[in-house]
Length: 146
Length: 118
Image 1: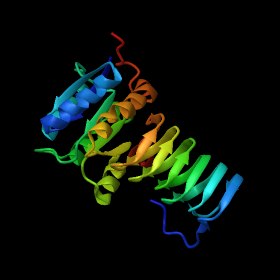
Image 2 (image 1 turned 30 degrees about the vertical axis):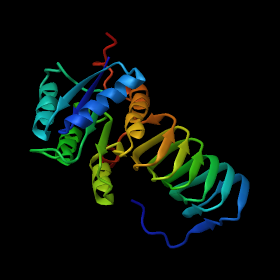
Image 3 (image 1 turned 90 degrees about the horizontal axis):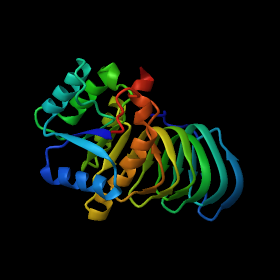
Image 4 (image 1 turned 135 degrees about the vertical axis):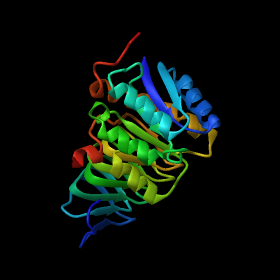
């Protein structure tokens, strides 16, 4: 089962993300961090050798309470364990500055949230292909098929 | 980000090319291409009216029109609102705007731009 860290403070968006995964039949465990601090704490626990949760994929909103998505992204890319874990920034921001900053900090995919429900749910299809192509190579020792 | 180019090739709106395109300068496609495109080291722009059916190599790719084919090894690719992309992407950094359509595999197993830069 794939492990996904979703850093998102909007419960509606969390629900939609879960629904998008479900609609594609993606076998995954989505752990939600409602703010940047919690996301960093989860990652630090994994780095400290307590990988109860070590994500195959990290999905970040930019505008998070406490620490924003950029701060979380910086933290992710500083940790050797997560250096190659795919990071998707999922945000409503259309700002070219935000997207340039996210890519420069190490995001692999900047995905702008759609106002259209069908397109929002279609995120599941994109995430599915990402999970199929990358994370096994990124963290070969923590992938679980159970 | 690539430096601002000193020259740029443009394939016009009324132009259709079938075959192989190799460019050693940035290329903008307003017309139609059916074949292969190699713009390695430079930026490829497929403008809103552009239609491309080709496997593409370029350092930066900006799709506002239609692209049917695979993209491999790009530094960044941006799928703009209203763009239509059918194919597989393997790139360091990918942007998909609201309203940008993409159908195919998205492979993020390459290092991100930050990791690549060290």
